[in-house]
Image (cartoon, rainbow, N blue to C red; front, side, top):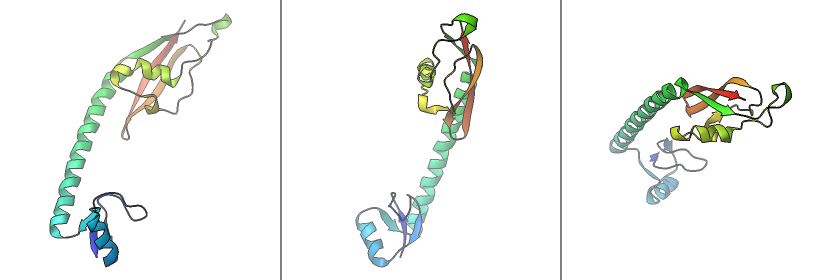
Length: 143
């Protein structure tokens, strides 16, 4: 029996996959509303869903590109305490950077490959806005 999954099913596939399964299991999945028969109507429905999903994805990428341009224009400055020979006390963490970027709705999980900043000057930090859109922002530590 050929079916189209309507939701993820452990060990079998993800939503939208077309599978060949035994008749009994296929009937079970259809009754549980986790799948539909792979008929022309079901395939058309799957195709429409995939197209709308692609369209939403492209819109999201376009929004992220706009955000990337706005973020990369700015330099974000942090004032830190320094000791003898300009040695920084403490460091600037991902959480502090995320707090500074809160108006752009950036979380600390979006900051990639980050180690705390503990020296004066300008540092480049990567922020993943989308899997396909990565922004490089400038963080400046000053006395």
